[in-house]
Length: 443
Image (cartoon, rainbow, N blue to C red; front, side):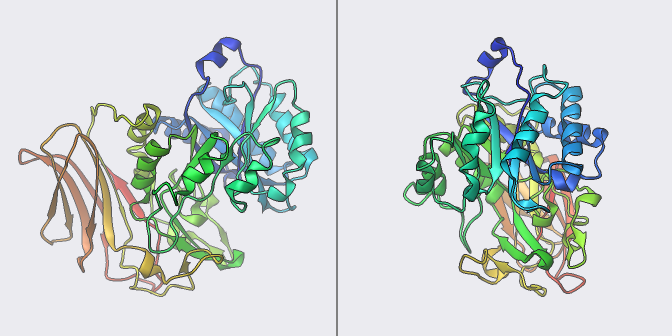
């Protein structure tokens, strides 16, 4: 789901971004139908503050109408906020209302951006060949369309890095005459496990091994309860946000794509909640699990994670101490599953409570030692953890039957340096239906 462009770009600027590592956030344009330019500008500013280099604009069919209008607003907003914030398209072959993208509409969309009235501004994130990035969400059955599409832009070139995770990495090697790089949607664990990191079984190693040009996905969570769309599942989140960034440092991909900025229906949004973007059709009402469940706290440590990625895994010096923390608001087994299972239909499924841990997860960014991180649930005694290094320190604390407001502090020499308070944990959901979404805070 992503793409890019605006192609008149000075050679001097090209030299500045040769082989540069970049971090993008996946934006579902279809959820932004009620946006105006000011809202796009607000989101771009928030993303820039978090260290994000650009948005991947996921677009379902048809191009004409709302999608084209919102793309125009996004480019206008990017131009007015800062030239260094990049946009590129991800053509969603499984979204929209008129079926998969046909080649002529893809060309129309790309030409629209190429001929955009702000073309002198460097929206496009180039690869080291100076080509504009284009991506997809699925569409492997239409891979043959892309030779002709790319031929339409031969004077400048397209850098095609699709997401075809329904096919294995070896399949991609047979299409390297069209594919320039790969992006994998495999970023959540299978069942009651963490993502594998052993090179023999690590999917990121396999995907990067296709041709070395890899866009790695990083996501904090996944939970959806939308029976209208046949989507009632979750994958383990828990420590995932921190673990994936730690793994980025090992894999060293050329690009990182955060999934997502605003997919509220799947609960992996890191942007602000936008009420009109929450699925609310009959039988597909995500307000039940999204309302009052902010995720902004996942952006708090992004500047540090991203800077570490771009420096080859070396953490920068810490000037401001911070906390990021997240948890579910009741034990996983305390309410009705409402038909939700752990894992997708093509995997072995499990009851949700076998995959999700009843814990408070938290990461402290500390600038000096010693430092104690204290976690307290309600009126219970606090539990203390010792930071082992300057920079990022990640921990978790089981609920252990405790209820009440969550308080987390960084303590040094007996004094509180940073304190954050979060929503109360209860014994069970008030409506009897489990909410497997995360409440996320920061300080």
